[in-house]
Length: 271
Image (cartoon, rainbow, N blue to C red; front, top):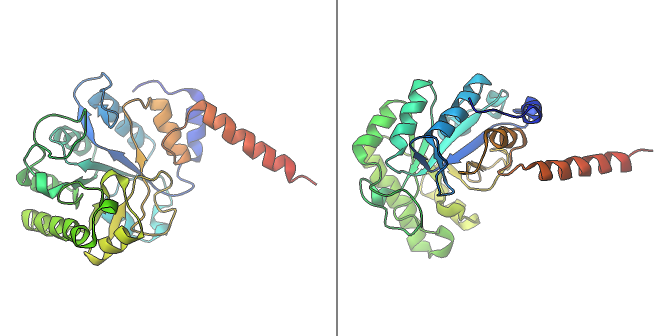
């Protein structure tokens, strides 16, 4: 495993005290080198992260399981692993999870199954997306398949009929392809508001994930689940600190500022 600095390891002792975290991945590239796309990580780094979670006793339920269970069920360290979009390279990630007895949730774009993605995103993986047969195999192996709309649109920018269609048609298409209910959803680009959350509930989803950082259940709302983005530049030490603080970016400068504020507040409260 990649080296983790002693301070980050010490800070991790508090991990789990504030509840579960949800990790958000997109693409996994072969080898050890950090990919150029910010939302991709190398296979070596991904495996290092999984090994750290396993070694520290993290439970890795799916999103549906996280929300269905009472909050008291997640008193220990819990990290829900999620993937957005449904890139073909995710098959290797699925195999890595299988080998470790871990599970994850995939949010896929129903209108792009088995095809080249049609939305713009410079730098993303080339080639096709996961197809229906591959998703069925993943589901049979214990992975959860959720929805990420039909066309990967910003839901806050579409009118009400289009919003309902993106949510309902994606759910129906995936349920037809998988033969099981699809109850989890993730807002594309993290773009959401109260109207989108209400539409997701009306469409029959039980959960919806945002890209807002923080402890997963902080808002006590299943349609506002928070996630921590895993970036290509995250070192293992930063990954460990992110787990500890429930934050996307935990540079040492940010931690020093955090500790200074805590010290100032404690000093000000002294009699």
